[in-house]
Amino acid sequence: MYLLIPAAGSGRRMGSSRNKLLLPLLDKPLLTWTLAAVKASRSIRWVGIMGQPNDFPDFKEIVSSLGMTKCVHFFPGGATRQESVYKGLQALPAVAERVLIHDGARCLVTPDFIDRCAAELLHCPGLIAAIPVKDTIKVVEPVTQLITHTPDRRHLWAAQTPQGFAVEPLIRCHQEGVAQGWEVTDDSALFEQCGLPVKIVPGEESNLKVTTPMDLAIAESILRQRGV
Ligand code: CTP
Ligand code: MG
Image 1: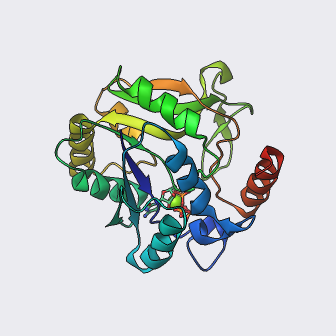
Image 2: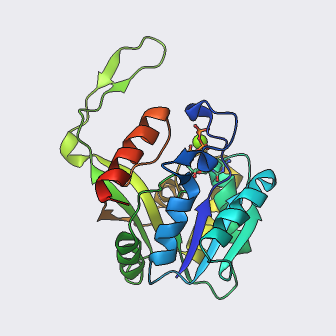
């Protein structure tokens, strides 16, 4: 299975001066944990990491510290996650039929879960990891800050990564997104906009995306609990 890792963000919400993927989590850079899970997965044979070129020396050091240099490729990312993924898709080898996409920032993903997503992807054109929403979600009018409605929580799932797709339709969806000016925060949204089916793979609650300093503290506590 082919895997693309968007890692070209800046971590604005983390409030740090550098890419959050290079911040220490326990004793290693955050991205090391993500890549260690990728390394331990049995299904992933080819990895493309999209990053900002000034982060590449640090990324390369992480990859070589894990001893996984052979199957890992680096590609320049874009100004948004959407652009970074599109660039990665264009850099995939022509023989790639299906691809998993996993955010560098979801560093607690397990190798087993990656493998489960890879196996499921052989049977459907699109899937995402997701978990049932625990909170009651409100839709709010941005100017008045008044609630417009409360969607039924039983239908709400929080999207995670990995997300996986057949490559050819996903590239077409990205092209359509550029043509129509769609701005989305995951690849599933492009597939959905194009009317293509995306299946849910029930995810792992611990597979959080490290976004704020609080997430970093939670991730650290989960890793300690795992006894790593
Ligand atoms: N990402 C990317 N290219 C971008 C922006 C984000 O590849 N131009 C990646 C991030 O590196 C991250 C993933 O997409 O692994 C999810 O994005 P997010 O959590 O939003 O990370 P950042 O964009 O870095 O954080 P922020 O939005 O707080 O600036
Ligand atoms: Mg972002």
